[in-house]
Image (cartoon, one colour):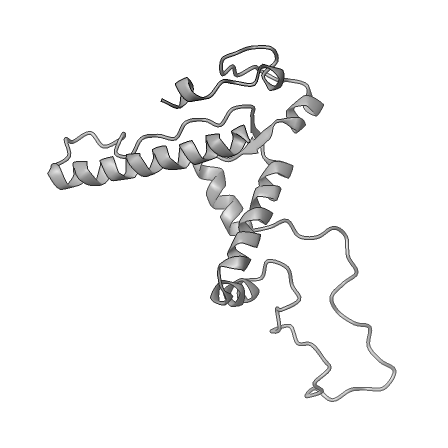
Amino acid sequence: TINAQYEIDVAHNNGVAHPFDEVVRDKACRKRLRGADCECCREYYKAVGKLPPGPQPPLWRSPHATPMKATSPGRRHLADASSVPNSPRKRRVRDEDGDEDADEDTAAIAAHVQQISRHRQQWERPKTPPGYWEIAFPDTQEAAAINAQAREMHKQKRARVEEEAR
């Protein structure tokens, strides 16, 4: 098991050698804990995307003293959302490019979660096993699929623990 292979670093666990969830009420101390998301919040973070940049000047320009033609190539229209952060049109173009932008979005969403999440914890909560909430007994094919999902979850957990141990 993972618990038999790895020891908990006592220096990072308040001097305790087992996973221990302490109630942290101090606002500054809670801010230092790892931000997480629940099932409900995960959908919110996906929909919102990364945090918009801080205060910026407006996206429009002041009118010129001389009128410009409406077909001028240098003029931006409201339909051009390429400069608007988190716009659906910009996101669609990004997704077609490849996985690098998706990784950037994932990192940006993780930073967003870390910055504003109300769910703070020192230890990652265990994930619910696949098929746990289904009350009927699975047939053979469903049981094989559930076991495959469980093996994949264990591989991912082992990879996270190995990465954290480094």
